[in-house]
Length: 119
Image 1 (cartoon, rainbow, N blue to C red):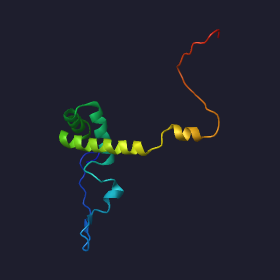
Image 2 (cartoon, helix red, strand yellow):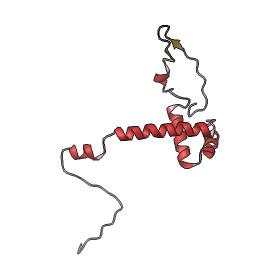
Image 3 (cartoon, helix red, strand yellow):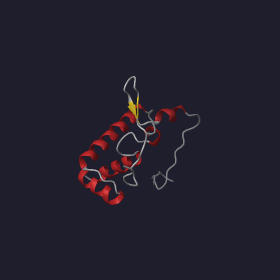
Image 4 (cartoon, one colour):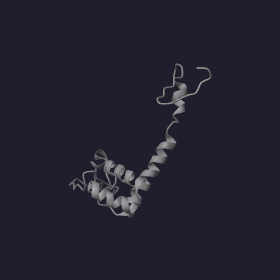
């Protein structure tokens, strides 16, 4: 399933006669590790961040032609959330490269009023 709706692919399927391992070799290059493409997964996550799983499933069908039931939607978005948490835990905190950078600290802002004394 993609953001453009359901796409049917014909692809090669290989099986190793020695070990029995099977694969669709092009899937990794196409980003097809699961039922939902990476972009469709992103849309699904955006939908469930706004609506319940049942309503999000209806909206995805209505807005993008992505037909998926609420239980499947829950499973895929919870898997995506776990992957996001793992990436977040493995990433450096933003303060680390900032503190290591050379130069003086700068601060820019817009639309902030700061009261001063006598100024």
